[in-house]
Amino acid sequence: MSDTPMQDFIAQQSAAARVWKPRRQRGPRHRRLKRIIVAVATSLVVLIGGIAGAGYLFVNHLLSGIHRIPNIAALDAAHQPVMPATTRRSMTTLLVGSAVLPAVRHGGGPLGSSQAPEDMTGLIALVHLNASKHGGAVVSIPPDAVVQVPGFGQLELWQTLKFGGPSLLIRTVEKLTNVRIDHYSVLDFAGVDNVIGAMNGVNVDVPYTVSSDGYSFPAGVDHLNSADVLPYVRQPAVSEIGRELLEQNLIRAMLDKIASQHLITTDYRVVRALDGALSVDSNFSNSQLGSLALRLQDLRGRDGVFVTAPTINGSPVSGGTGPVYLNERISAKLWQAIRHDAVAAFARRYPFTVTPGDPG
View 1 (tube, one colour):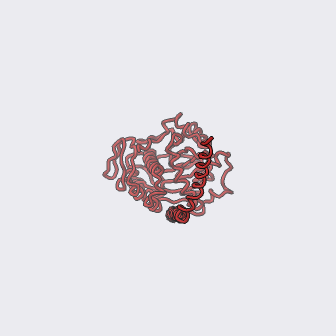
View 2: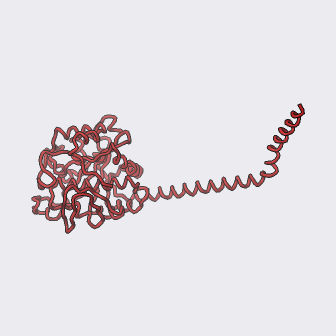
View 3: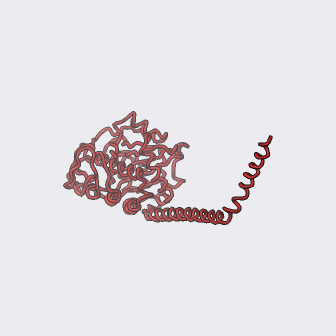
């Protein structure tokens, strides 16, 4: 029993100490320290937010410098076809590579074309991002593929630009594939060398040894820089299909590096270089461009793939510049795969359509 009063006393003293000591020893000083901590933390938040905001504004300013293509009627809502719900939630951009063909083609040169280089385009591709926001595909269509063109009958696909500009090309591709085109963009290969330079070069997997303008590109992994990228895409000794594959291979390497290293949001040199090489439709907002850049990483995963619509004639090293014809049976399955976000499954079934990958 004698222990109980002592235990009560100790308990009372401990309680008093817990109440009394902070008031005497940690009062004003503690409050000052707390105010200092809060002020420093607030300043850091404001500073970080300011830096992020300034970075956003700067990137937004640079993206605003990308040339806009006005008055593309086919992209107006009233002119777009009604698509399934899954397609409406996905995003498909029609990417066109500007003319990069060698001067020998002008005036019926050795490659047998009478069209001026400025009338031609070396790459027509659908950049498709799945509705699930996981995966996507870049699907190239040979520019010299003979297709049904609204109002003109059968023409080579690239000729739609000559007769009706981007709108006719978009309408033709939509009729061919039954895939709605949300946006339109043009990559000028004459400015790609600056983009490659800003990216410190890219690695490409060259499918076969080629030479151009004094440069040799052996089969296998090649590192392209700003000096040799144009000779790489200007291959006078390969067919139109072969040139398309080389250009698609380069596009794949560029998109992969931009996505894997987040270059649009981290390297302002790349954005500045893109200003001079890329044009997009006037409906393409800066926020959509930024979102697209971030989502390019979807093309790197298991569900991302690069394919080319198969043809029944022509090959990378033969076929010249004459027209080619799509393998309608397999191409129909490819278009269906785009509409159902299933191009990766299509590529596994038809591996010969897959473009060689970026070796990293």
